[in-house]
Length: 246
Image (cartoon, rainbow, N blue to C red; front, side, top):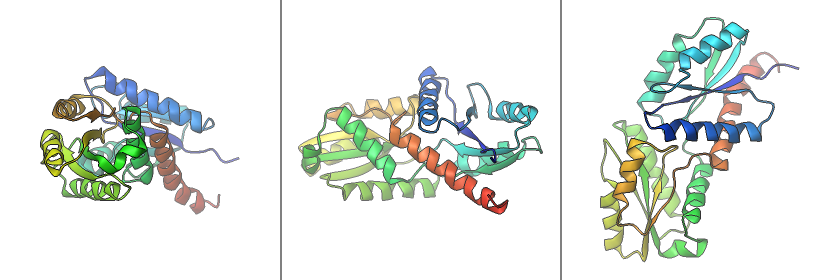
């Protein structure tokens, strides 16, 4: 049987210990869904192991095939520049394919709704509730456009209104979107953080949600997030396997 490529999940990293803890919880979820798959985690900054360190270790073990998956929701600077640069410095014996980022995906919308329901909403509340889709923010126009498109798509699933907001780099901020939904006449306002793990910017989103009725948790190790991650892995490895007749 041909050996499956190792899945290397590349996370940003943070000085906030909650970030790495959440990433590791998500990886445990992934392993539970695909027990036969080897899953490794590397961080771009702040946490260990580093991406370079994991790649060096894999090469030393004799691993040859790796799927590198950016643990990111949009294709912004890290996916377009930082991660490809790190992968170019990998040991030459490694065959590495970079998978796509996690978003957009209908499964991520399901994960957002899961978190809102866990925070106290019910499906019956949708028609009278305005939701702030609060992301970390980016200076990359492509990433901003993806968030705006996602908000429009989510609105069509039955919410009274959905507005995008950003914790940095772009406007509006979470608190501004909350006020806009109040003025629109929503019976209640909920904030759904479109972020994977706690940290500085998610905390800023939480502060901006002070006047909202509901604040959901970050996506974290939601089962839908783990399923998207495996979908991206499968999509990245299939062309390589087809090329060798698998």
